Length: 156
Image (cartoon, rainbow, N blue to C red; front, side):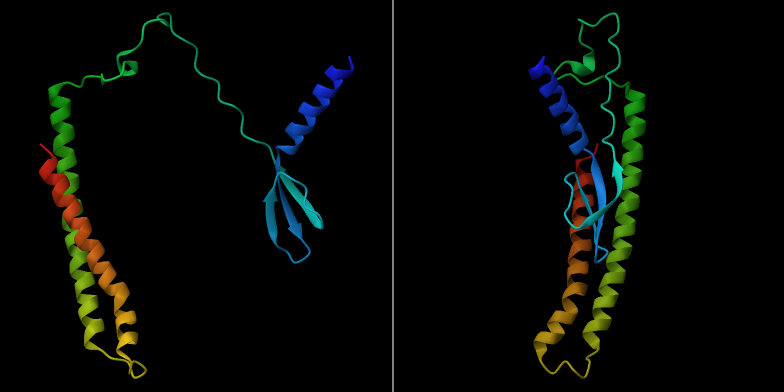
């Protein structure tokens, strides 16, 4: 009887310790912890989310579905796949146009920054540091365009 009671108390204590609580210390710092904090006031506790229950098995529980068989994907009819491919291509072309517009804006901003020179930039290193984010933005847009073009080339 005594070991059963000890196990029960241990389980109850571990489930109580698993709750995450919000603590506020004397300086007003907020900390979330599942362990009581010394010198901090417990404000609120949160219970862990419930464990999801799997849906009941159908009558054909022993037979795997086609999607469950490794190496086999569910089949889509040709017309649906063609529509998906056309939509995907249209989306990629729109993304390419948007990205090319953003590249143009980034290049324009970089040129504007290159043409101006602030009075405190006597050291060329400061000029380079100021231009770095603009150069990075141009490079990022160029990489994005290259990726989208590659994606378009790979599409059917």
